[in-house]
Image (cartoon, helix red, strand yellow):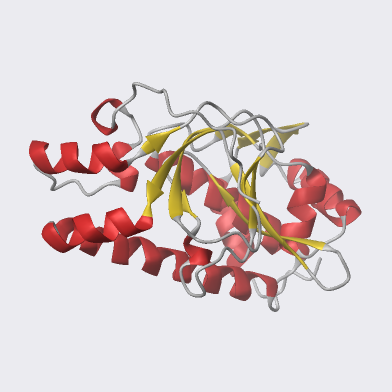
Length: 244
């Protein structure tokens, strides 16, 4: 069941949040932003492995990552976990509950993480009176669908090297949107979680990291990553001859 320990006491507002350009429409007037701000709940930080919601919980809200990171996963009929997504600051999650009115995945914090809860019914009502919010919600849903399609394409017919390179470049691009370093960053997830998400073994992911380091594509120190040759990684992804 959904986490019920969160106490909404944070004084932070959308206007003060450095992620606001990523998760809210830029065109909102001050009075419209105030209305949006009033319906958002900001909880005390989640600790690593603490759940935001569980698969099967009733869909009530979407969530925005304010700091930290989130992992979403589902569990198959045999009890095996399948990672379905990672979410960084400024990104929204929980859309999977919209179709059937309950969450399809479980969402947990990968590290100490702060999220904003946005009740979806109230967001819809506000969107009816502020068209820019409604359009923004549609764009976010479209982006989520596009992300799912990219994951399917990534896992179909791509080598281990290409899968890992795609994931690293995805993190690079997403961090750049936050005005953070796109070449030096920390991966919040474990090698096991990366391998699960990419449909690979942990050993294969470790070998791929070692190969990238030998090829001077990157420098890796545990979870710390420095991308040295982004064009080289991009070329690797487009090279159909890569078979590793």
